[in-house]
Length: 334
Length: 287
Image (tube, rainbow over all chains, first blue to last red; front, side, top):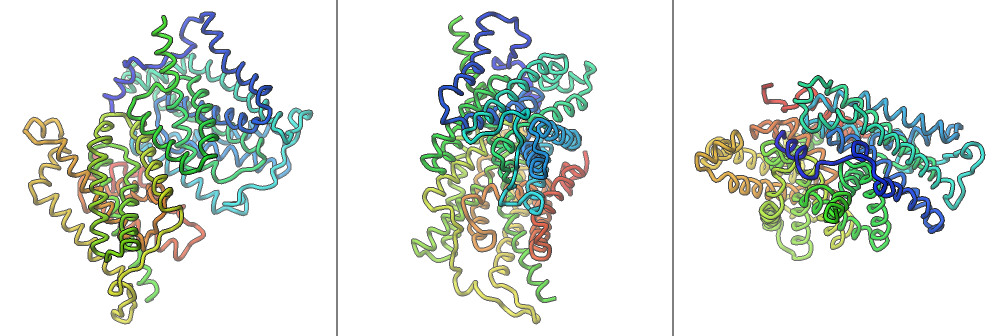
């Protein structure tokens, strides 16, 4: 295991975050590009707003996975547990008569972060391979619990009757998804900026140190388990907020929010975009969601087939994803 | 009482099947440290080969099962040589992505050709029905499964402990570098073992159509079960995973029969608890 870590730390594709690089004007422009495109899409594709909201939510989920997998180096197969917990928290709050969206979002994030904090010691304690299976087992437990507790969650029928109040008391969630998209985009933007600050902070750098070589980091005095637990909880909170956004904007929660498929798709988005780079998570989520939309219109099997091919190819071709490609292109030019 | 015994027999039979399906995984995951979430796909392929041969080609049951095992072994051999061998040295995330991708591809292909519905087979006359034994009606197919899988367990155990190949495999696993230095063809040993494991999964899948069911979600549905067998059973013996599979099968069937409202929750909880208490498996002594 250490051999692969070393390779990752020293390899040419060791990720560089914008935060530690000197800002350059072209770089700033490039970084503004996805957000300009996202706002432009609001005007350019008014009929695709629900899909665009889906991209923003998927991007937030991928971002949260990037924090824990890409930066902290803890591989998880059960991140959907936090996404689903957030979705059910926000959904149940709204269903039970508290439909205020922003407080619902915060409550969902807090609930998921708390679950993350509670389960992090279990995941980290078990060791790498067993830890992977613990994440899987925990998410399956939650899925099964939500499935069987149909009197609370609606079980396989999903959570019905979610009524979300107007945003800030002024903007109703309309049928066309205008409010939903701008709301999701704003939340994504805020949390993205926060994540940028986080990964460039001493905390974020210590996470990358741990991922590079946990033993050396410990020898340097980094409290490895505490840092990883904190990162796990933060990533869980992010995923919870992403789930809450889905619940609030679609006014519905289904068991899918907790499924293994969602965890796996999150990993694919991340690897597609480029692991350990926050922009990669955004690009990966966008590419993934658009491809999903286009291919599953043809047929669900078709989508599943190509999704699998993409996973196999990405795993064999090494990481880097879209961001790696862009970086190579940029390097070739300079 | 007789109802309980026949449920118990069901549990033992499905535990035996789980062992045959999962034992190959205990080599890839446990010994070679490769996270192979696609192991169930070999079982699924075996199951479908058996269904097609039985229902569409009209081949008798036993040859169809044998052909299913061979087909899965062949697929395992091809995939190991072409793809798996490339990810042995990758890190766990890449192995996870690779094997999930494989499951998706194979599931989609099967779904495309066979549809998403559950597959059914007609057992031959001599395997259907029940026999009375000391006043208890026992399913013939269950008894057949227990005898057959028991023979597989015994063969594997003696193969690993007594044969030259078993000794080489144990050596390759204990210390691959030294084994290579001693002139053992380690990659070939792994290929053979992977092929054997895939073939056994195919055998389990074919035998399990009647017991575990078969549809394109089979690999994902039983993935956790296989992981439990390996994680709980440990990897340095055949007997460890066997006992784990037996326990899992019995608990699962008893749970589904007597407390259906709890469902699979117990199994998942047991998996997490056991992973935390004994990360190296039930039988292995803590290092």
